Image 1 (cartoon, one colour):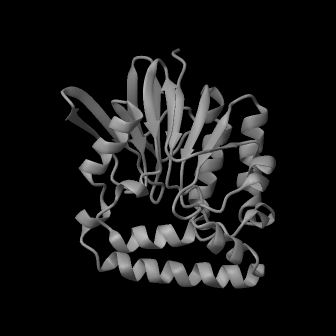
Image 2: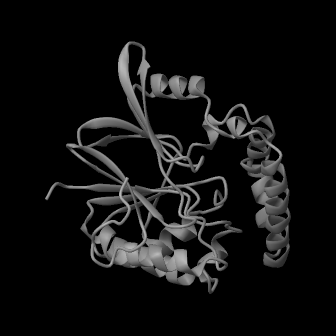
Amino acid sequence: MPVTTLFISDLHLCGARPAITELFLDFLRHRARSADSLYILGDLFEYWIGDEAVEHKEFRPIVRGLRELSDSGTPVFVMHGNRDFLIGRGFETATGARLLPDPVRIDLHGTPTLLMHGDTLCIDDLEYMNFRSQVRSQSWQREFLGKSVKERHQIVHNYREISRNSTAAKKPEIMDVNQGAVDDIMRESRVYRLIHGHTHRPKEHVFNLDGQPARRMVLGDWYEQGSVLRVHARGWVLENFDRIESGQAQHAR
């Protein structure tokens, strides 16, 4: 069996969706154990108020599942998303996972590959890009993390309501990636393969970059089912699944 690297993103785990949390925990116990490594490219959680959350009841099983996987010998890498960008060293210590910068270039079974969450490619959504710049600043994060847990929960709740209303009013194409931004970052990183999430529009895009064939794989979300990208030396396969107890993906794409 070929050595396989797994990629997932946009699980948006929270207490309101316990079935998806159970699906993810099952994934960690079974499919992920046979992988050479697992990459989570952002938005593992629906929200993250700070690393105190590792002790919250709804997140403790997830933290424990990640720790058990990393302790079993499967390296786990986590990238910040637009919902859980406050994940920090406390999360790393609790889970055994390693935080990755966004973007990051890796050697993936002999092919240089760029990994991103994907939100920085959506440059046509000016409202979101301005918001992102604000909340990613050290001053904003320092002020936010200095508030009480109760205050932080309320701020996050308010932001989520604003985000839902704002998203509903935007044209879908504004919230998708900009091809020029894709070309620029791939050219700058000297790669012809990119993997990212964020847009919830799973698909492999094949295009021309400076006269060379290039590929961009968009990962699926975990709202109705699981989604995983399997990559090995022979290629990649994006799958959706409802169950993994048997070790076989269902509804494969």
